[in-house]
Image 1 (tube, rainbow, N blue to C red):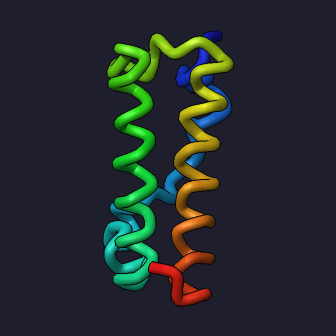
Image 2: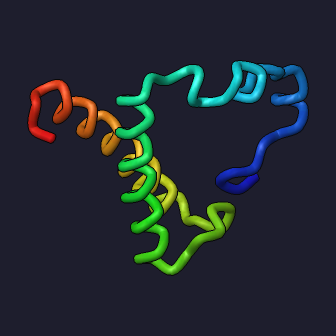
Length: 86
């Protein structure tokens, strides 16, 4: 199995997704959504930088970097807002 593939047996009983919760806009407040969008922009820039928009083709190290840009970017954006930096 490669990065991004799901084992159908493992995921067959999973029913929770953001659609069943009404989408991310009902789960996150506007500040959180803005921080997520900023992190997503940076993660997208990384994908463009490496010339790979098909996430199923990312190498493990590229996948880790993409996730770290997204997750850490979100956390840093939230921390900056709470500190009044941005």
